[in-house]
Image 1 (tube, helix red, strand yellow):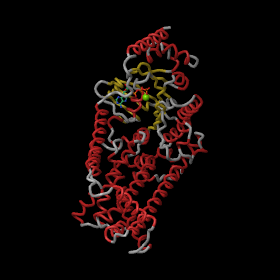
Image 2 (cartoon, chains in turn yellow, orange):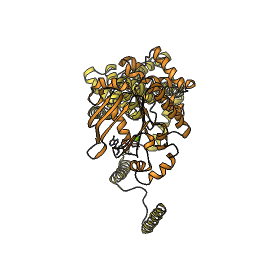
Image 3 (cartoon, protein in one colour):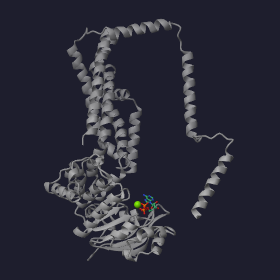
Image 4 (tube, chains in turn brown, red):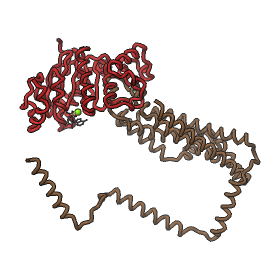
Length: 290
Length: 262
Ligand SMILES: Nc1ncnc2c1ncn2[C@@H]1O[C@H](COP(=O)(O)OP(=O)(O)OP(=O)(O)O)[C@@H](O)[C@H]1O
Ligand SMILES: [Mg+2]
């Protein structure tokens, strides 16, 4: 009986309060500082974009002709590709070099990041250590890979050494964040269970943390491998790291051979797709296997 | 029977104002089956976790197997923990690993860091794992991934993982709270059987008074961090239930539990 009455009072109260607010519009999202800042940012970005387009200087260029000739170039590049300054086999060899650069930097980066990632994860490490690593890594990530390569080129000279060090550096920064966040997703209870049975830290890492986060680790590493492949192509051109990127740079900037640029683009594209396919295959295998 | 566990004046507070345990005293004999009951937030989980130092008590003595757990260093604490198995409401298995790999995790505390990390177990350990899984009726699931098991099966894997430690005591934190009545009965029967046939002391947190009354040699009632009751099931009355759980709840729960009492 007592319970019944209290239920009635509650519902009567809530009906009353609905009547009171009937005239006001009901907001679904509460107003706060964060949403105001986001809105202001979006508005100012839109304004800046509009201003930039208005203030472009088009005087020497006929927009229509420009578009036509761009299309023509694209057509030559992709519909009439050919080899001139080097052969199919050389191109294959050069792609392998680029791929090797991407593979090496991803492997180094992943190993270092895996190790440091354990200390960066809040649930596996102490607060100050985790905060220190995460802060340091945020700084590394905020500088683009290309810049790191150029920074290391000051000491190592432009070339493959600077490219390997610079790319590894940024990979470490990126993967520590990715790995440590996957580790933090791990169910606290699993760690507790192993701790309670007397297992030590390294045993918990290898027996619980790594098996549980394996799919994440693989996904993030493959993703970074794809990024590193693209960066490695660019490094060939920009930092003299060799590989297919350098040939592309020669074909476009030195020989002005659009058709050869087209061939190389197809090459890079084919490899990128192959990588993607392999990555997907590995991931599905991992998910279905016991 | 000798005393296996003795708590003297154990207190624990989280932060400055949350008092989870205040001056708890009780002892448990070897092979005893003891249930801890009490309302949500009474400090049951905290009490269990103070015993194997997953949570550090602020004051008091916890004497287990003639050693004061509270004063142990890191290394000795790990050694002491191997003698205490723990079972959880949410099983806490490594989902991606097979049943037998999860069971063998119970041996990690006995192994070198390297052997444990790489999962190099002896034939003897594997044989024992199979034997325990057989006793618990899991012989068909040995190589299944543990996230493919039902809740009741997962909890049995949890029990197997604790048993392979050859523990002197099991701490069970609401082992049946996520299970249906059938699976609950299977788990409780296994726990009772372990205590009776292997002489392992079992300390179990329960939400179901009727289950506690049916299975326990002794019941400990906790409310707001203090011991309210410590005695055999047949001494439990409606008044005591009321004191543990607060007014009104007593009537309801005792109606359910009454049929087993006495
Ligand atoms: N890690 C923690 N930090 C702060 N307070 C905590 C922590 N763990 C538990 N508490 C508090 O200590 C008190 C006892 O909690 P405990 O989990 O031991 O209760 P319980 O009896 O197990 O409850 P339940 O039946 O809901 O599991 C509660 O007031 C809880 O809020
Ligand atoms: Mg609890």
